[in-house]
Length: 180
Image (cartoon, rainbow, N blue to C red; front, side, top):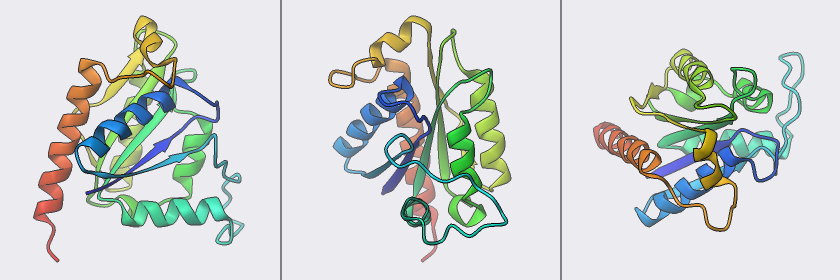
């Protein structure tokens, strides 16, 4: 199973990025093939329907990874009750051919208690792209974020583990149901 994760922060060592990196390590131990597209490491140009970005290396890589994905994890910091601008910009480069029929896990990190507003917005975007939202989602906030502030020793908490397991179960069911 091939999982693509988009780390939707342009801040290096963002807690949302550290969380998805810990999730990626866990998925690899479960024998999944994981590709992490980190928007802090690979910034994309501002999307415009009036311009072609077909030759941009980052856009090409994101497009290829997403077309090959069996499952998708979208991670964002919550800014002012919304997803990050860089994640929204990345999603604007994608379409139904990248998401249709694929399971998607939404993940957020908030400065407050939890980032539910950003998760609801991600799920709306996924629905509009014909992806299949995982019934679980993961949000870290408040004191829980401290667990994900150091990239070298971040380990998944029980809630993140539960959400990831639900996503893997959904992805497994959907990939087994695909007709070749």
